Amino acid sequence: MTDITIIGTGYVGLVAAIGLSDFGNRVVGADIDPEKIERLKKGIPPIYEPGIEEYLRRNLESKRLSFTTEVEVAVRGSDVVFLAVGTPPSQDGSADLSYLYAAADTIADNAKGYTVVITKSTVPVGTNRALEDRIRARNPQADVDVVSNPEFLREGKAVQDFFHPDRTVVGTESERAKEVIRTIYRALNLISVPFVWCNRETAELIKYASNAFLATKITFINEMANLAEAVGADIHAVAKTMGMDGRISPKFLHPGPGYGGSCFPKDTKAIASTGDDVGVDMSLIKTVIEANERQKKRVARVLEEMTGSLSGLTVAILGLAFKAETDDVRDSPALTVVADLLASGASVRAHDPQAAENFRQLLPDTQCFSTGYEAVEGADAVVLMTEWNEYRSLDLDTLTEKMKGRVVLDARNLLDPAMVRGAGFTYRGTGRGV
Ligand SMILES: NC(=O)c1ccc[n+]([C@@H]2O[C@H](COP(=O)([O-])OP(=O)(O)OC[C@H]3O[C@@H](n4cnc5c(N)ncnc54)[C@H](O)[C@@H]3O)[C@@H](O)[C@H]2O)c1
Image (cartoon, rainbow, N blue to C red; front, top):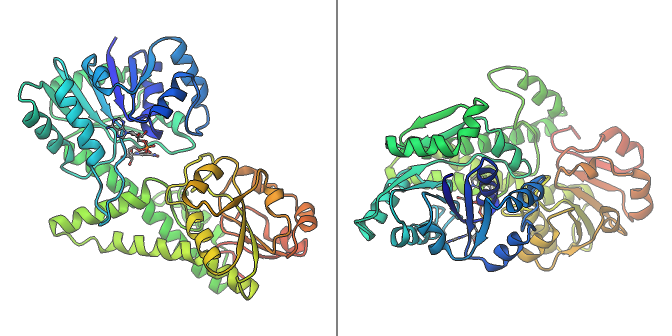
């Protein structure tokens, strides 16, 4: 049985911890956040992620999974140490690697015997090599290989993605490290998940290139949606038909209020910053970043067009998470929209099935309600921001009864325009003609 420590038990580290213990490894999840660890020890996930609770309980009970704040002790007893700490953007857009370096120093000071250090965090090209140099410089006796193993999971489907990834990317040139990695991931090998073996720089760039491409694809369809709206075309038919072309694929062709979350915004900024560092023109990615900012700002502007003025308006916001099935609000478009509405003199009544608490930590003035129908009470307008399933089946009679006004801005195209208009509302989606 391989002994594994995972440093950082956030969205990525926790899913890796439950997954790797489920594969039969002995795993310690280590985090500097004592509150998180206390909850995890009791089997209570600190995040909302479908399916995670069952796996957490099951692996805690099997004793293959445990949690600690004593990162040093955990590292001392491990053959493999995963790095899954945050790499948030710095002021200049480059990735802040301070959490990663702090964790690497803990490894340098505590690793015993041959240790494979596996970086799951998203890090700029060159970081894994630099990490290895840093550990060896700090402790010349340390017998380590630092491997890049970027994570591709989607929040909301993270558990499923861990057990059934499209591919697993491993950046290392060390045969010894490859052997260890084959052992800990043998369950994936058994179900024929493709493994991509490459050098560390290639692995690091695969991750950024993938996220930059997806962010570009979303931004592309948003731009087409804005155009469709202006010329009376239907973006759904456009996107669906584009997607029938095998070279394009229908995925990530859903228009909306801009991409958000903890990855695309920061990773596009970081790859642009890497380009600047090495003197490569990244104007495409930089344009995507700017266009996405404009898309987020567009929501309040469209609502103003629909209502004449935002000042004094009561607006119900349905959905605060950056996408459905998560409680993550990092860089959520709803943050921009709520801030814009408040700044324009509107008042906001919000609802989200999972993310309200996290949202209020970032924008404490947001009034949140426990159901969508409570949030729309007395509202002049409702804005649908997140594609939660429960909003797809909103009862229009109840909306009519509870709302003061008759304006629906459906930023995610969740509702049937004809039905909403038929119920007496002024309706706009994204890219569905006007
Ligand atoms: N969230 C995603 O969907 C996703 C997907 C793919 C890749 N990633 C990447 O994975 C990394 C982690 O992302 P996340 O969303 O899980 O972050 P997160 O903020 O949810 O979790 C990071 C955790 O690391 C802990 N931590 C920080 N410094 C530590 C230290 N020195 N020792 C122990 N614990 C420490 C924090 O307390 C926190 O619990 C990032 O680089 C991110 O870009 C995230």
